Length: 611
Image (cartoon, helix red, strand yellow):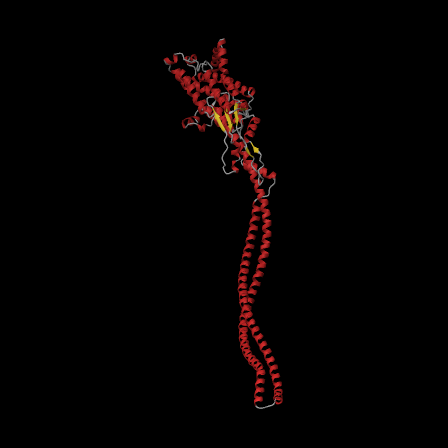
């Protein structure tokens, strides 16, 4: 009996009754229904997020508006909480429902919302606190209820993180813009300070030059006043000597004047005495008068001499007094000249210090001017537009540039390779519930084990191909998934179905109904090790090892490469592995059929529990 005849006989058996046909059609549709319905339900769940109810509680009381640059406070307030609420509602990421605290708590407990987001009363105050003396972080409170839906909690966490990132970017942009505006104001003030420092430097240089001239002058003054003091001291010494000599002369003149004055004052008495003596001598009055007349010229000359002497004495006294005054003045001059000389020396020292100080000041103001100029150069000039761009960059410095070597169009397309591969296994597994693994009639007739094996494999393989064609139609037409290589994808699905048919055939040949159960166990193992949802690297080590052995993971990988436009070489290696599984399973099944044709046991004659 040839292979086509054995296949035709099996198909006639399966369609011999209406119930058989219905059962066959139902089992053929199992992978189509499983894969199609699951992927339909999960085709684009993110698009349905706007229908997920979420409670939004806004208790923010607002805060004074932060100032920009050197501006004075405006007295206005900001309310970032209301801004966030408005943006969330407008964004329509979820079905945001504004509630009070109590209403939100009741709704979360009763399951009418999946999670709650609360913006507390000090939200704006915290966001603006960085400019004060008590900076602290703002809070956004997330409350979830895993009894409602665990994934809702995960979505809430991601949503709050996006809110936090958005608010941080907004506030960071405003803070950075205030900082940049302040720096711009500082730069303007630095320019003014630089101009002032330049003028100060010029003035200091002029003052330093003047102080040098002053120091030179005071040095000359000090030298001159020192000479003057020395001369004044010499003059005072000489004047004192002259005064002493004049005083001695005046004393002599005074004594001489006194003698002459006494002589002059004695003339009348002398006249009287002479007259008396002459009278005693017996001279007549006429003789006496004649004698006295002879003496009168002498008296007259004596009086004139006395007058001259007294005048000379007065002049000598005046000369002595003048010399004493000159000596006193010279002494005062010498003292004053000494004081002036000391003052001039002190002034010279002060002028020298002033010169050195002004030189240091000139150098310091030049350093100040250069430092301010460097400060101006260190702060780049900006415009309001540039500062706005800079603030945006500071608040959000990293932009993610996303590029995909191969891409799935949506969540459902991302899951399609895994569930299509799993559907292929489920479909083959279901077919073997009614398809006989081998023709016992052919085995009894000792037909060729290879033919018997091929016939037992080709029947479910062809029905599996029909399953994969139907599933491909659902994915491409009904669900609208796009395929970079649709023919190649369909080919992988058919090869996978054929490989799974060979594996389950071998299990049934060797283990009978137990083999069918082992097929179920294998499906479970591959379900968790294929890496269809999370990366296989996240698996525990024993399961990760199975990922590299069991065929379902290779089917998933090959479909991804062909469906998304990935690496064809990888898909080729995956198909090679499936080919090894296919050949190995058929070889094992053929060996089992050969054993059955040469050695029958009571177990072989007993009807199978399944199929």
